[in-house]
Length: 112
Image 1 (cartoon, rainbow, N blue to C red):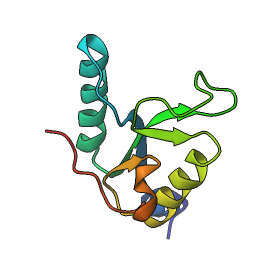
Image 2: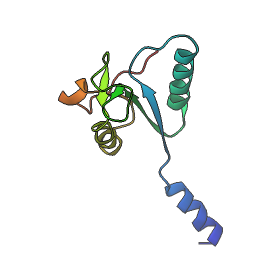
Image 3: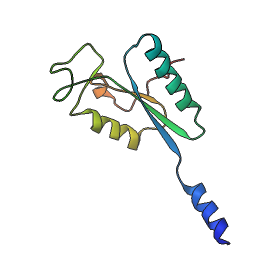
């Protein structure tokens, strides 16, 4: 096999995926439109895509010392939940919130 063919085969073997970080709560106006466009572009990606819709962050270092209006996620647990989804869940749209504790890998249907 030629060197160029080897490089081509190596490039084909690279796993191609995209991650979109989004919000799990309603937004208004331009912000809502921007989030929807970003999620649509992510779903249109030719490879595999994962959309993580995070609740409102709360805890040390955030704007909220106590849980704000749901959906929420504590700053100390959001990373672990996101990592679990990225390593174990199939491509889809997911909620990353405190309510998701019962079944954190259940996909949340994409908005249409």
